[in-house]
Image (cartoon, rainbow, N blue to C red; front, top):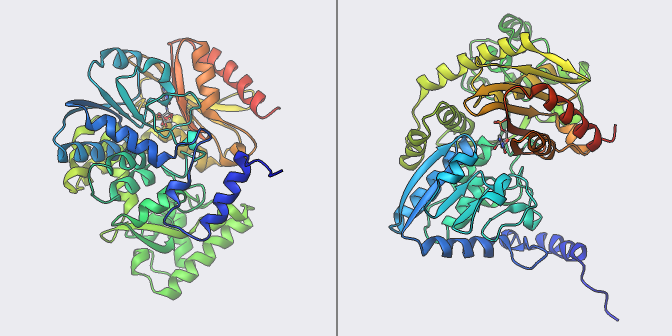
Length: 458
Ligand code: C5P
């Protein structure tokens, strides 16, 4: 009798095949119930093409912005009218206000029960709740945190009725930090990369290769350089000690100088006891568009979108004119002030650190602030952040990746804790958010702590 093909052996066969033919990689992602993600994207494209008018509801970050730009560009090409709503999160109010056929981008997976059949969803956030018209990578064994972003999903759909390249999809993936975990883009993102104008280079992965060296290393966040982080004088001292002109940019350095800087930085990280995985992230793949680090564009879109200029950001993507340097400068100085404020407010609840940004830190960037503090302070526990908004309290959580490897899933913890208090939440394993009623912060900490202990069986 022949052995039955179980889902596992099926995937093993696919893995074997993947060594022999790369072009088919995308279509090999087959769900347990038989339909591949590409086939599902085609089905969703068919539904979209039958509409006269569409409302796009998208998230205000770089992934949502590029996703909406892809959708709008493609719908314009086939003459379907569309309006766009750029939102910070999907509240009940927004869901109730939607009356047209809707294309949800970068959100929706956390609100499946509230989304009717007159919609399609291209969201990469984790959810195992089924929706007939959702292109959810997790249904197909694809990791939506590293292998495809919402912009990538929108592209898989849109490429059925238009034929522009996948540059915006890569910008969305980079904006969503999908290359962070492995130090490179993987999975479907890798295939999209081949179909884009983005160039892959091997270089230092620290942001700001065109900035003066002392600024580049002082503000490096992945990895953070201990003793130098945010200490410009120490950065200048370090570079002078190794005989490098600190005003030069990385791109202006010779090969020998680059080698010297890299090996000295690695020495610092080794002496401080950082892991091999952490240290090796310093050098690897970087992605450039027209000679510019693509992270520059993604950061710009993120800040413009989160400050309430989502439509302007979408227009930039469609017109491919990325100019917003002044806004970016303003954003950076605000973030620095927020970090300072948050650090003063840092508190602890049973080993979980948290801060309350009150109405000082904008709810749209409180998560960014938490992420930066987590990396800067090298926290080994999750970090929670609260901020007020018009609906209640916005909560953001960030956690180091080694906890995710031990079984932590912030998305589930935030969703469960928020729902117990009448709110809602979701996101990713290492970065998640929620909305809860005002005055429930302490109760939230208690429930969240219990959820985390349960996940990590502490
Ligand atoms: O806002 P923040 O940056 O903390 O969000 C982290 C992640 O959590 C994002 O992917 C966001 O879409 C998700 N989130 C959510 N529900 C909320 C707030 C955020 O799913 N109410």
